[in-house]
Image 1 (spheres, one colour):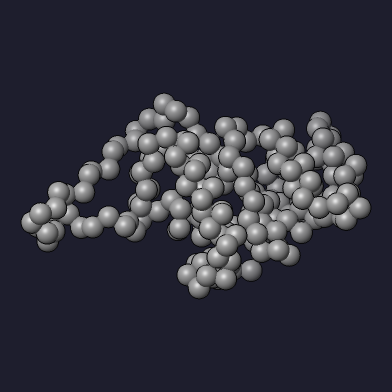
Image 2 (cartoon, helix red, strand yellow):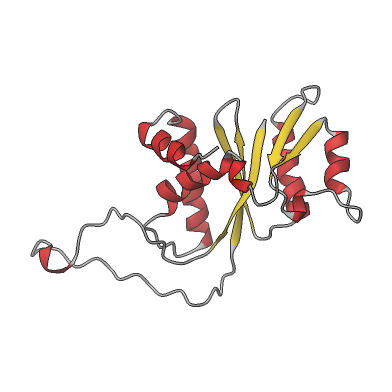
Length: 188
């Protein structure tokens, strides 16, 4: 069973939060330069990115892909990747919110058709209840460990930081700090 959602928009702007950099100002050591000031980000000349992510409840693993746009085609592309992780005879379930690209409508039946053809069941959280999706707590941990206190100069650097976090998370799924952040964010 996968819990799927999008995280973003991922902007190139300073993110407030805890920082690893030492303090500046009058309490800093006399031999240190003050830490650099954060840049202002009033415009988004390089656009935004979106993280398509899935949390595998059985394996306790996080999967993700960063894309320039967030639409039904990109969602289906990500779902095809998730389907490739398991044999076709094994039925998988995908839990997602009721964001319009996730839905099968009268006008666009692609999601439902793909799910029926690939032995996938799609379950939706109730309207205004996306917090019931277990991946939301994983996004809180991603924000806490990978994005808080950063100011990435490019989308490539930001994407690299997110990928490194996902790799770290696979190796340290039982980490106490990670478990505390996720438990605090889980409300359901």
